[in-house]
Structure formats: C-alpha cells, structure tokens
Image (cartoon, rainbow, N blue to C red; front, side, top):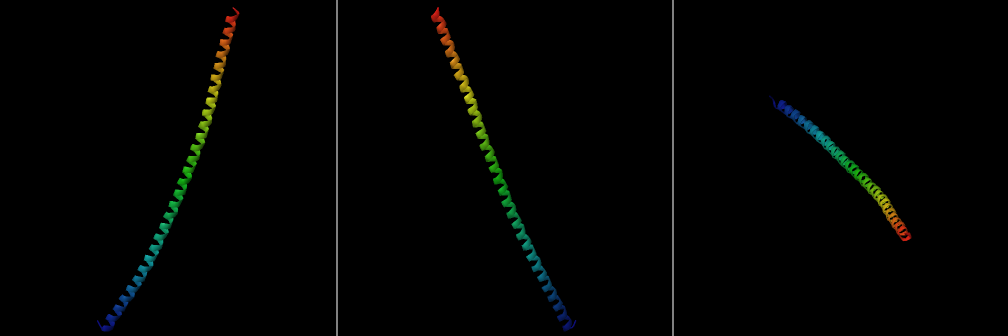
Length: 107
C-alpha cells in the first residue's frame, strides 16, 4: 500500500468518524428532547391527578357537610315530634287527674 492509499483510507476513516459523531450528537439531542417531553407529560399528569383528587375530596366534603345538615334536621324533627308526644302525654295525664279529682269531689 502506498502512502497515498494509506492517507486516503485515513481520510475515509476520519470522515466516517465525523459522520458517526454527528449522528451520535443528533441522536443524543433527539433523545434528550424526547426525555424532556416525557418529563413534561409526567408533570402535567401529576398536576391533573392532584387536581382530580382535590376535586374529589371537595365533593366528598360537600356530601359529608350536606349529610350532617340532613341528619341534624332529621334529629331536630324527631326531637320536636318526641317533645310534642311528651307534652300531649303530660296534658292527658293532667286532664285525667283533674277529671278523677272532679268525680271524686262530686261524690
């Protein structure tokens, strides 16, 4: 092999090395951009998931609050009904006692 042939082969090798290096850098850049986009998608998914969970908890809290209001209303109604029944019972007892006393006094 002559010196020119060796030099030509070396030039071809150097050209191929430069081409491979450029391809490597291009691929590395593409992969880094793809990685960055993946991280951005993950961040967006995280934000969306957190928002969904916050909304879900707000809905649960609102339902619990409404249930508490409904239960309190039901308890108040039951208590009012019970108080009316007790009041009626006391009045009936009082009326019976008065009637018995009147009957006994008339004898």
